[in-house]
Amino acid sequence: MVLLLAINIFPLFWAIWLSFTNFRANRPNEDIKGVGLQNYERILGDPDIWFAMQATAHFVFWTIVLQTLIGFTLAYLLDRKFRGHAFWTTIILVPMMLSPAFNGATKWTPTFGGTASGCSKLASLKSVADFLLNPASSCPGRGKPRSCSCASA
Image (cartoon, rainbow, N blue to C red):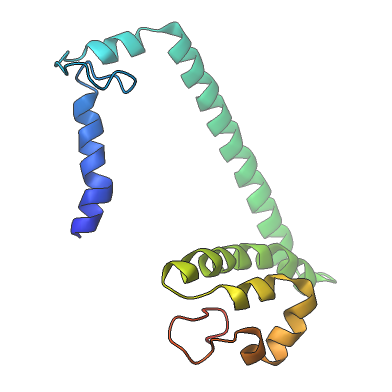
């Protein structure tokens, strides 16, 4: 909980407090003085900022509309039974399921003191069969705690 506060909450409140001052990151030795809402008045009075906000709003709106239409269309098509239904469902769902698993295995395993060797081998196509048939050979540290998250099942 303390770590959460230190990493997330404190910087948030620090940034909010700095937004009401004359602080400039490129001039760290300058005295910090409170300027009230002057920074917000300057930003919100700039026509370029409103143009950028409008462009961002258009991008967000059309992205959400297109993603929703594509998502519902795919869901509707995959809900209907047709020849190859299982194949196309798998093709669409496998990347969605593998991405978090692979990222977690390759990024968090070394963080907690293990090696990602088994996971890296799983990623190469030539050793997938060996990994599935004999997981112990793909992860030399099998049996040791925190050595390979992919082969621990």
